[in-house]
Every structure is written in C-alpha cells, then in structure tokens.
Image (cartoon, helix red, strand yellow):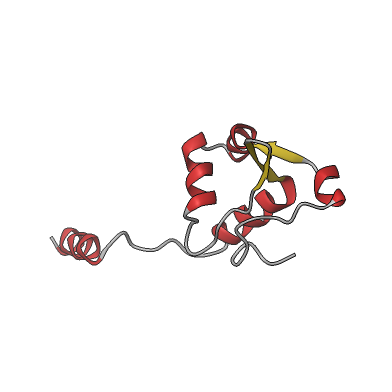
Length: 96
C-alpha cells in the first residue's frame, strides 16, 4: 500500500473490508479531535500528508492502520511557525 503521503484513498479489497475501520466520527474520537479535523485531514491533509479513506455506499471510513500511520507521520514532523509575521512579532517580544 502507498504511504499516507501519497495515498488519498485505499483500494477496497477483501482484506480491506475485513480490517478494523472507523467512521469519521469514531476516528475523531479515537484521535481526540473534532469531527471537522478528520474531514479536513482526508480532504486537504496536514503538512503534505493526507488521511486515506474509503467510501462504502454513501459513508466514508478510515482504516485503523491508516489512521495510526497518518498520526505517526504528522506528529513526527516538527511544527512550523504560523507565518513570517508571527516570527517577527515573537522576536520583538523577546527583545523587549
């Protein structure tokens, strides 16, 4: 399976159907975040990493292994400054 950095959807196979899967609400609860965060992770990603999801009928699900890989990949990368403006403000506060 491709890494979470390149995958946007998981191919549905018999193994995929047998794997532990979460609804987006269940994935949000498991990750300790709001439901809108899981939707955003699947649509836009975080720091260049998208959360793979599968659609069964009219519902979307996240495989447990994909959620764990996504969380590990996004948490392993250092946080970035919000913007250059924010960095300048922080430097001025430290200098004062």
